Length: 243
Image 1: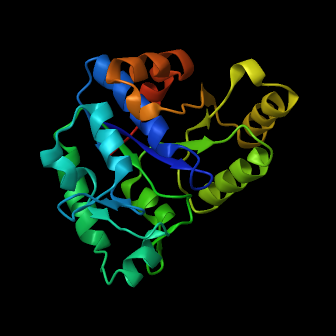
Image 2 (image 1 turned 90 degrees about the vertical axis):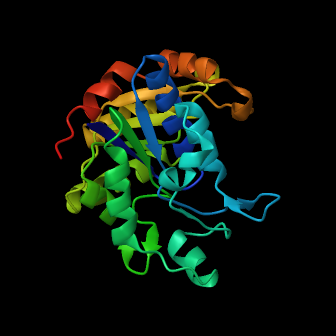
């Protein structure tokens, strides 16, 4: 099995978009890809009163995974748009991290390649003192860090990298999301220059801003991913996973 963990420098950076784009590209290439968002906040109740995470819905569509497997894809969906540890407590929900990890590892076995998306940034609390970084360390997947093209990207990206290195969490590449190539100038290009220089990580993609992402079909999303992400390099990074 091959796999990647996708995290980011912050919340609302676009991890789900990047994870979905990679999944769509792999699916179109004929790879049996699985997607997982173990915990999600900001879920919305459907007409039946069931909480559904929109991020999980997008990932399932991109990978061609049916609704019957939603619980495998997204074990915990929380309504408050807060870090999971806080959202769970105010919702009177107990998050069983060992069970989530056990079930996740079992579900992953059916796929050729798996993509696991985190929540927020590396230090987001998932439950009590357990952080996203702890989950990344336990799973030990190669990881991509999604960053932004705007001012502050160097600081946020390098600090995330430094924290990961300090805690022996692997990071293997950076994706710049919401990158507008036609408008990119000194700011955007210097961000990428210094991110590469200060982390020694490859930048494996510059993905554009999509205002109506949900309207894209899988083939169109895959095509965009192939144009703006180095899918061959991303797959090669995922192949370095050792269970």
